[in-house]
Length: 236
Image (cartoon, rainbow, N blue to C red; front, side, top):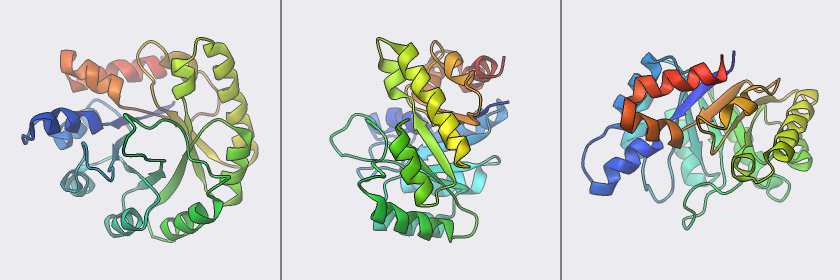
């Protein structure tokens, strides 16, 4: 069974569009858990464009499954994470001008920085650390060298490609290499109700993290139904 992590960032995006106190991503997270998801994912960005610190602190108290905090590898965010102690931290690249995360971390070029951050977080009791990386052999090997235990493979290129079969093969090979190195593997970014099945069939992927497509569907059919429909697709 593949686990499903539901990212509720875009519930907060709707809220922040009018600077109201609704819809509440915390309530959305509770509904997602009731529908059977295995974790709640939020990205606390530097520019606070959607999720706010208040959201993350409340989620830490109410989430019954696992709380996965996506964040940049900055001193300020590391301090926040070590204080909050979410169940998991996923380190992601971040640029203010990007619309959404555009690719994986460059672990090869940022090895020293990421090694320090991974050590600090993994030495904090209760935090698992994941690195969001492209399905590139050199990035996977670099993640292993800095002693990361979990990686999340960036599926964006598969989702956007005109030759998805080639990108799917890259994901499959990346999972095989990761397992040979003893890494736990999750995947996500851009997955939706039309393209998720092929990724879910890849042996060795333990968790899929999906946000925008579930929230978009939830606007029409409700969060619980949207989550249940995704679970049915990834675990037919």
